[in-house]
Image (cartoon, rainbow, N blue to C red):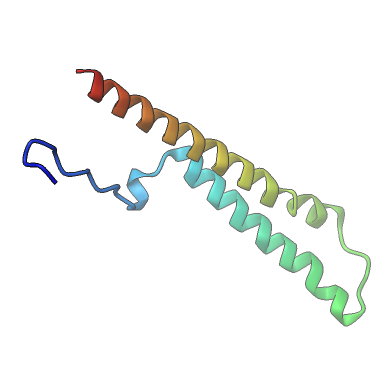
Amino acid sequence: MPDSMPAPARASTSRSSRPRTVQAGFTLFAIGLIFLLITVAPFFWGEHNRSVWLNLGCLLAPLGLGLAMVGIFRSTRADQRAAAAQLRR
């Protein structure tokens, strides 16, 4: 690498560096997976009628996944814009 080129900056992977939308998405996804386990596991023991609120809680998993993906997409686009602006200087 030539001396005139700066070294690429390392991406920080700490929790505090993630956007709030990604953190919220991961949290909702995890809660949705817990609801999913609570809802599906009793079927193996023969219990078939689960409460509606448990089934609705399972919808948090895809909602959280979507929210996290949107947050990641927006964060990546912002990083690309910042890098492009840095190159234009």
